[in-house]
Length: 612
Ligand SMILES: Nc1ncnc2c1ncn2[C@@H]1O[C@H](COP(=O)(O)OP(=O)(O)OP(=O)(O)O)[C@@H](O)[C@H]1O
Ligand SMILES: [Mg+2]
Image (cartoon, rainbow, N blue to C red; front, top):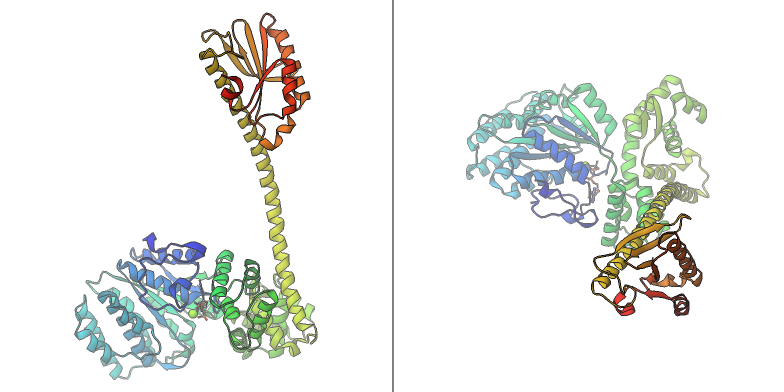
């Protein structure tokens, strides 16, 4: 399987083998960048459904973090594999609907995807997830009649029963229960081997918009279904606090939470550069890293900044990026999305307090405050109980974060910008210097982060440099030793060939050698080769061509001196022959010195130098 989960260059996907049964909202599939870790996790989760060991998951993340896109790609991978898992995607929409309307819509879209799976006709899957079209039982039954697919009889029987249920007038909640039970009902039909991967997008809208009559929490219908291992769910929620609270209260222990993280920094940079190119901006990796900083690696926000709109500048530097954010925060999508969160909370919280507290926490991003600390620091005129309630609501609607009883600013810097841009009067911010402030503020943050990274890399570089130095030293020593052995080999060959010159008169059956002989004084002689009547002492230099001037007359004389000392110490009755080798040659001015002391000298090319 792994085959379908591969990244290509720059965190793009290798798309070979993936059939795009549903159209992904990213547009062209090759625009989808990264997210491989998240999809790998979900893929394993889906794979385990075949063994009936996967629990339902709540996939939570604020707007635009990329939840739907991840589900869509997972869908297409599962579909392409055809390994006994039927993917089923259903998106709850905004807008009120009766339980009965939901019933027909949900079940029809479910069976369309089942039939799409069996017939391999992706037009059915596309129809099933396209919210612009309406679907109904009659249409589905008509279509099914002409097809030949597994379990056709069971599906038709179920659809007939559904049609009858629509004709009756049950309580709205009954319809919700029956709809949500359908996927697991199908998966447990005798003879059906396939399991269902249910992907339910925007789960919060079930309680908000589906009219279930007396039951005002229709999500409870999932109490039993969410536990079924043959058709577990992955539900998404962008109102994280709301969904999390509702699950805790109405569907306890049914879901494991998966908080969707922002994109990995490198992936986000690659994505920014990619869209930058597509939209005609001139974005360097520096500018991209600034953009991912102000958007906190949230892919949808990156796209908001980059997508061209009338009156919005093309981006060629960080000031342009700030201007694009300003545009979006004043009138564009970023304002619209955050206002949705703010308006929801505003219904329940005093408007001015809410914005002031949110703003205060945003400004002190990274710090955490107990309610009483906030009251004191902000000089809030509010009853303690009320303060706690309001903070609780802000948390529930994802406008602030909570950590062990303390509150902090939400992760997203674009919220800060929306607050500063649209509510400066309430926040009592000085009007002039305002844009300047945000720019400095985010640039400062950004630069601080960069400096931290640079400091870390400096430290690392130091460690690496030291390691390199040591390795380089070791390497040079080894190179030196290697060169000594090359020379020794040359000498031995010369002995065997009975060459004249340095090795003349040494018998191939009567010689011994030693590398790195130490004198008592601690000096070292690279090669000592001892024949019957002769001893050769040689120095070997492996200096790079640009350093050969470092071989000086003084060095040569020192060599002569230490060799004579060693000869006197140990080889008194032998004739001493000296030799000096340098892999890359010598300066010409040394030749008279060698001649003066009767030293044989040569370079790498022993043959040419010595007549070996
Ligand atoms: N990995 C990615 N590569 C390229 N584009 C991405 C990526 N992730 C998200 N996007 C883009 O970001 C935008 C938001 O993504 P998506 O709709 O999946 O987010 P969401 O979390 O489902 O948001 P909402 O809560 O509003 O439904 C989309 O336009 C999508 O194309
Ligand atoms: Mg979505």
